[in-house]
Length: 87
Image (tube, rainbow, N blue to C red; front, side):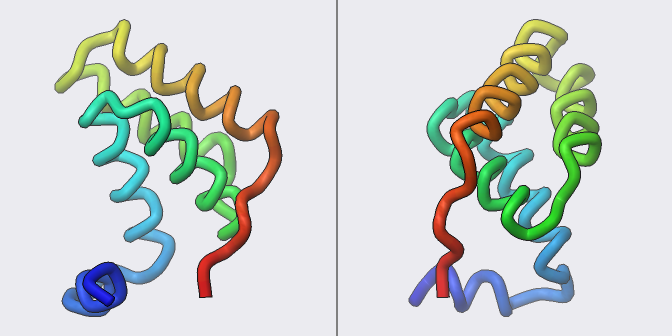
């Protein structure tokens, strides 16, 4: 699959890739993707503090409202519970 090939194409480990995907979803201002990547990150033992840090880093690029919105999307997604891990 394309996703697997992209994941293995470079030196980033699984944790870094998970945080990058969350950041990309936030940058795209895609609520569904942000929520999905937040739940997957939690399933991969990424802490809420780490996910919030990704959202805070968006302040200088996307602005404070976008960063706050991203935090709310993350928090709401994690209240709904984890998604199934992909094989």
